Amino acid sequence: MTGASTPAGPLVAQDPITVRPMCVEDLGEVTDMFRTADEDALHNRFFTLGERVVNAHLADLQAPSHPQCHVAVARGHIVGIAEMAPVEPGSEEVAFFVATGMHHHGIGTTLLASAIDDARFRGVRTLVAEVLATNHLMLKVFRDAGATMSREDGEVRVSLPVTTTGSEHGA
Image (cartoon, rainbow, N blue to C red):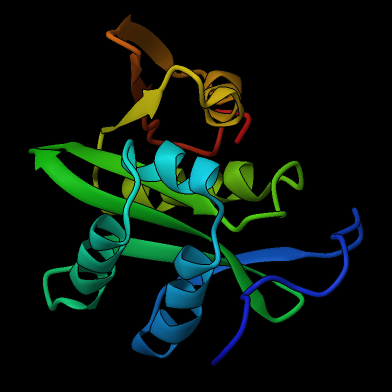
């Protein structure tokens, strides 16, 4: 697929956002989403800038050992991705990326709810994340889901227990 991966025109409340596991056929559109992202979005996701870090990340997503990934789809286009990777038994790090121009539509919240459900299904007890202290949108998503947070040197360490029943996280 070529071109930007975002739907034409702004999303509206009636536009459904679905989340599904990422498959190999999604890699082109995921690549486009990262390559067309603005610098702020890339800095919030990778804590640095540069094509090299994006290329390395895209290579990781294509590797056989890539993290557990889900994509958010709206109007037939991928508009976000959630990545989960084990950090210790029972705990996984989660990271999100929402396409440029697609913020404020519930995509991050929807991806987090899906990550919680998937983690619960696989027996993961805690999701953790490192978020830049300036990434207010992502911090709000985690805060609304009931995560605990601690700040250290411009970063916020997030911990979100995965409950054994239903999604009570508000995500």
